[in-house]
Image (tube, rainbow, N blue to C red; front, side):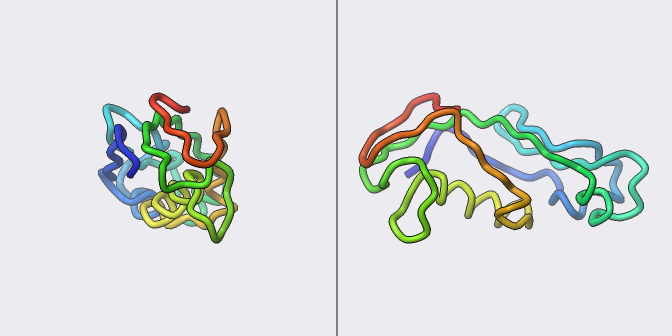
Length: 113
């Protein structure tokens, strides 16, 4: 189970364009969704926007096969990507999740970026 960071959306990223949104950032455990100023709709804003998130995560890696994405065995990157895809409605290529480090099978983390 992943722990430490709870992601909550104030407004879904693509729905936020008409609601005074500017950027996506993780603040105080909440993912706030905002897009470029002056965007007419979410799709046009998202097309020209590169979102950068910094997450510090902690997890028990007992049931995971390391960090690096692999579709079949459960990995931390795969788990996070699936959750973020569901939250943001972006596809995997748009999401482009990168970890600052890698782990092996069964390794736990506290404070991984």
